Amino acid sequence: MSEAPSPACENRELLANITVSDELFRLDFSWDPCRPPKAGQFFMLKPLRSGVLLPRAISLAAWQPERGIVSFLIAQRGEGTRELADLRPGEKARLIGPLGNAWADFLAEGSPAQLGRIALVGGGVGAAPLLALLRESGGKGFDFYAGFRSGAWTKAGREAFFLGALDKCESAAFSSEDGSFGRAGRITDFVNPGAYAAVFACGPEAMMRAVYKKCAAASVTCIVSMESRMACGVGACKGCSIRVRAQGAERSLSCCAEGPIFDAREGVLDG
Image 1 (cartoon, rainbow, N blue to C red):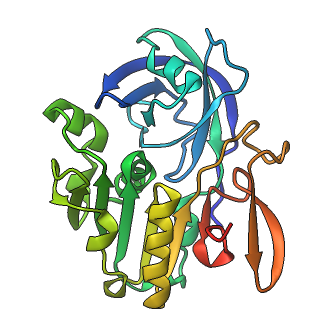
Image 2: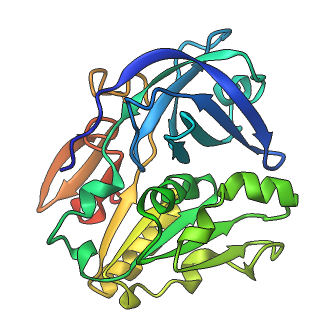
Image 3: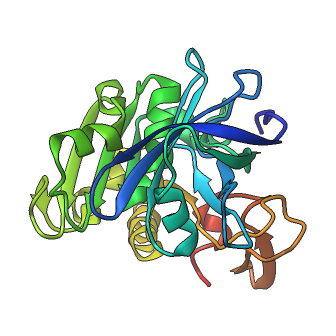
């Protein structure tokens, strides 16, 4: 496993709040270059002016060390993310992070993912941690796939979502269920795991199950980033436990402390 930077709890200034679509937005915060996050890790975010109890766990979308900026792509789903959406540049939020493991932990020398090309498969805002990997790695050896319910965004919204990361991958393919962006259909229909040494996936669980099923049939390693409601982010509260059954034994995994990234063969998608 790669050595992770120690997490910090800091009040940080919002530099930009950029609309991607009616439901998606991007937040850019200042961050200390001495605490560099890695692709796949997440932060706990909460505005200083907040009426909710718990922060929200949001995966890293981009890290720009030369400018000291961390970026997050967020889907507005409830009161906590609505508060984040209402933040304006100059306001501050509490950021706790970086937390969790990283994609790089599954790219170690000798791992299956080191033996050839890797497919990155993202669904909706789940593409964010994979975009961070493209930026971090320079994109060599990665093909990027992303699927959306609708891709009817403005040109500025699309640029805000992808953050220039697509210039770094070997190839990119897109789909939308309504046919407004890329090919019509679900992105899982257009991925052939047999062409890759490994597949990294992040998105809705149904999508990741479909990816894993295809990977298992092709005997290809499938690495997934899981989502769970988190309270502390460090494994202390056990609120984000994932029940799995592996080799006939049932056990619990802490999504925040033992993840959020797992080898799908651990059974994290079986619950």
